[in-house]
Length: 329
Image (cartoon, rainbow, N blue to C red; front, side):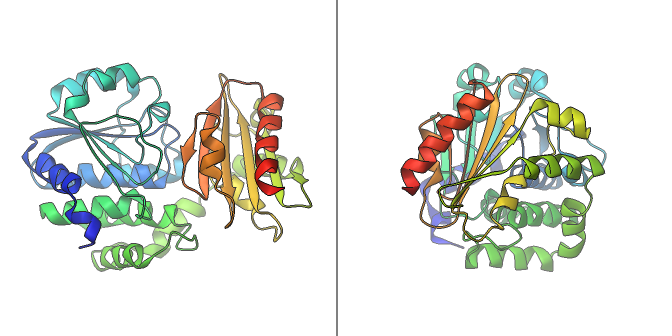
């Protein structure tokens, strides 16, 4: 067990999950593999241990991750109050920021005493009564695996698969700089318990609809390179979704395509939505993009961050370009 796992917050979370008869797990808006895999694993392991467990996603689950939930559909934001009040404990995973918990801020604040948070991002609000935030963890799936181990909850092949999807997706299939011995030990243990990396990879990364690739094609066609090709900027307009026939949840990992260019140090992806512009930021080594995101109310990791803004697309784009150029020049 890692040193972080003997922290007071860790122990308190283990105790509260162990004593809860009913709990609700939710993750951030625009859910990714880490948040969804962790949520699915905690719920399945809790049920296997005799608990009543529910899960909630404020957005739709991206098609590539639906295999994590079999035939069950997670509850939506409209169901939060009822499920939260029926639960002894509310578990928030992979975020500790109200901005990423769409439309639930007031409802969460009213129930703070029964909320625990499991997260690995540096950006943190006062969301829960107990918050285990371990920025050294490669994925929140690693942390959840350690909690499940401490509780001695059962881990079958489905739970192992969900946790492996969480860890693998947040480490870029063990390519990103956050890949460390702790993450690899976690992955090895999950494979021993039934996770099959080749099948999981196929489900996540080799099951796209043609429309998603058409959207990527449009995004790459409009890519701009600035600052001697050190800054890459991609924009996706609402009209691009219509033209490609793509869905709003089909842009995950688009930003990483720009980092295939050797000279690119910072990448920015702006996606125009019906009520805001979503921005993703990535960097290689020297630039802390979380500090850039924080200037606009966002946050994340030093190498991967994000934000939302109500500015129009062109204004947001210029603001982000200027902020990145300040770091690059």
